[in-house]
Image (cartoon, rainbow, N blue to C red; front, top):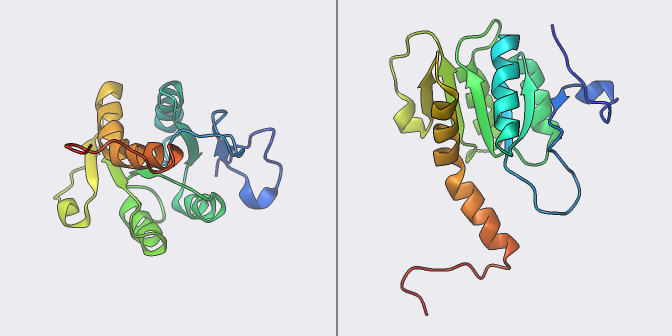
Length: 165
């Protein structure tokens, strides 16, 4: 098992890879993504790309560690997970995390065949191999409502409304 730690994270109960963009202070923060993929190369490349785009990313190589991260990080805005992994699948992981927070957006990624059924769950799917701009487009689409809501809250709830005075 591969476990990454940031120099700021030394507690063995929460050892995982943490984005340099993550700041636990009270200032506004970027959306936080939990990335889970058992392929270290894909995980690293995807993580680097998302961080470059301004997202804060926690990543894990397996579902068990991802659950620990989810329980220890106060706000995860999006779960991006490989569908087929050793041990528990991304689908099982998503179901477990959705049982904790039912509004968690989910993006499943996979190089394998997938027959669907995600629409009923409100989940999204992106087939591997994917181009990084395709991933970014899906992430932006999924997180747009979350980021709009956060911006409105940061403005003191005085967000613009269509047709309003």
